[in-house]
Image: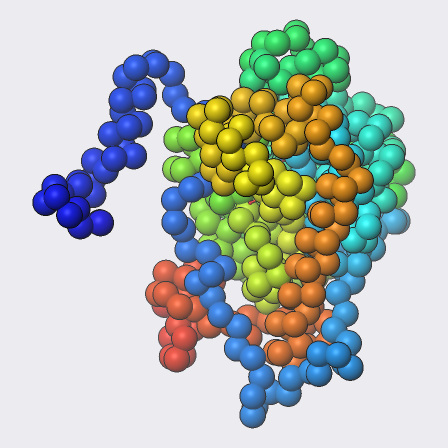
Length: 439
Ligand SMILES: Cc1cc2nc3c(=O)[nH]c(=O)nc-3n(C[C@H](O)[C@H](O)[C@H](O)COP(=O)(O)O)c2cc1C
């Protein structure tokens, strides 16, 4: 707690943010809805460090020795797995939450960097299909915008069971974003707040997932990889169930994962951190003997090459980014600060996703605002960011003596805190102690 110079003492329990939340609730009578992921501090990749090579390990020379970055996703059953140049993909973000220009820019940026992008709740737009070399099509509980032609037009299918920001909950899209085009794709009335379903309408349990995956394979002639995405909660069991149901790729989205709009209480109090979920997922795959055969994508708070390198070292095959991709496109840029402040927010706070008045033209359906985003320029910025992420990860991997990013391993990591050591199952730095190991 900050010591106040005037002698007043802030309560750790009823701090100013808590008092403000109570006052806001008392005044409005409605709960707080916002975008972005958990804002509280959680154990994360910052709490891990990589051990570079020295005497007992042999580092690779940055400019002369290769460190490859390619990854293949969907090798288990699909006739056409996805071959990506870098193990960072763009996570599913809905057209509706994002403008058509933003979706196009994501496709352009991902394609330039040799990776995939993903549709989202509300279906596939021609802009994103046209500009995405590898497009993953989400099959969601809401079924908004779902149609078999788009399934066949995609390069992979992602069955969404949940998101890290709101496992157990459905999506939200406020009425101001439900324009005629968005409403038409979702068969909804224009201008009315929408909630997406929290579970698939035709399933009562994991057996139904197996049936659904088979159906999707038949519709797409066994060509496309089928991903299963879960929000991080009981990850060890969920990953095992997804593998049993026939998934080619499992996507685990941790609690820091972004969202377009959800209740704040949900974002901050449900799910487990990405760092805690990842080793559980890897253990589940290893116990089934399918680690690396069923690929693992991890998301939720991935911000750069260091996070990516650490996630890969813990056993992920790739990471996915949402929030970082939007920032790279130009969202929350300081040049829009005055406009964000007029919305009651500020650049860097991301409390404007749900409102649909994003001055950067990204999380909006307002035609004038959306026209501010040039998809070519924004796509180039995203491609630059993806390249930097990849080069950062390569730098770290070479320092650990690895000729491929996927050769990074848990043995390359130590933890800075007891919590992160216990969650990541790597030793506390300077010791050989892994709290809880053997349990
Ligand atoms: C604006 C926005 C829209 C999103 N829409 C969807 C969606 O339609 N379907 C979905 O599965 N996840 C959705 N997500 C979650 C992302 O797919 C991903 O799980 C999350 O953003 C990863 O965390 P990160 O933002 O910290 O990178 C959305 C996230 C954002 C920021």
